[in-house]
Every structure is written in C-alpha cells, then in structure tokens.
Image (cartoon, rainbow, N blue to C red; front, side):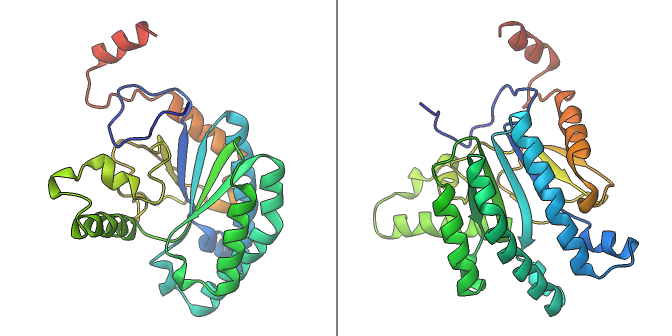
Length: 256
C-alpha cells in the first residue's frame, strides 16, 4: 500500500530523486542564437522534453514535473502565446499515446479556464487515457503559478470552515497540502532550471521548501539526456540534512 503523502519534512532521502521538477528556460534565447524565430525554440524544446522524460523514466524517477507555461507568460507577445497554444495542442495529440504505450501517467496542473475549449478537451482526454498508468507520472504545469496554487487550496479550506465542516484549529500543513494541485505526490527532491537563471519564478512555492536546486547554463532545447544525467549525478553527491547534523545523517545511514 502506498504511504500517504504529508507535508512533514523527511529525515532521509535516496540517491535517486523520486520527484524532479524543471523550469524549462531558454527557448527564445536558443532561437536567437540560431537566428530563428522564437517559436522555433519552443518546437526544439519539445525534443528536449522527450529526451528528459525518457531519461527520467529509465533512471527510476517516479514523478517529473515540467513548468510549461506560467500564469505570467500571458504577458508575452500575442503571436508567441498563440503559437505556444498551438504547439501544446499538437504535442498533446501526438505524444499522449506514446506516453500511454510506455505506461506513463499524464497530469496537467494550473488554471485551465483561460485555455480555449478544444485545448481543455484534449487535456481531459489525455489525462483520462493515461490515468491508470504506473511507470512514471509526468506533470505539466500550464497557466500555473505557486501563488495561485496556494490561494485556491486556501479557498477550499476556508469554504469547509464556512459551512461548518472544519474548525480553524483543524487547519494543518497536511490539510492545506491535500488541496494543492499535486498534494498527493511526493515533494520534489530536485528542481532544475536551465539557461543560467537562478530563481524559481513562482513555481511550486509550497513544495520547494527542502528541494535541492540545480542551475544549468544550457538552454532548454539543448538540455537532453546527457545534461539530465549530469543533474541526477550532481544530486546523488549531495547530502540532504533536513535540519540534522552530519553525524546524525551518518548514523541513520549506517542503520539502513
């Protein structure tokens, strides 16, 4: 039986991350470096997604969360946003059956209300097709923001208090987490951001409390299998203390 996921900070971690979260950055800069239009960078980024999904599945990662489109990305030029939406729809149509054949479950998180009905329908169908798959969970964050996620979870809890199902004293970390978009999945062990930026940009704010960060200077379209393995190898060399001393960690490891 799968252990219930809680908001409690763990005391130990494996050398291989259970959950990897990635901010896929640098598509536009990759396109400029190759003297191409911005949409070409996003198209090239799809190939990197395929390579990273395959690598993570092969290496035993249980959950891979990709930040595809933030709630702030609507501020981009309209033609770029339109191209991104078309690319998202095409990717769903072409790739979801491949995920299904490889026993990979797809989940899409974020506020879907801003997407057109056709795209929302494809999201629903893709999730339904892969719902029972068990090899790995691929989470796509689309029109997602960490502030939005915490706010919508808080509203759900507040509504339970309003109708008398809960008392304010019943509100705990675990309760709030249950209402987050991926509150039922393991917390990310490793967060990767490409293209040299070193910030989290409103991504999984609740979930990254004790996550290891890995920043790569490589633009996302070039972040493929080899770069993914480098990130996993770097993670395996880190000692995650979770507030404990080195001696405590060593003592726990000796008892394994």
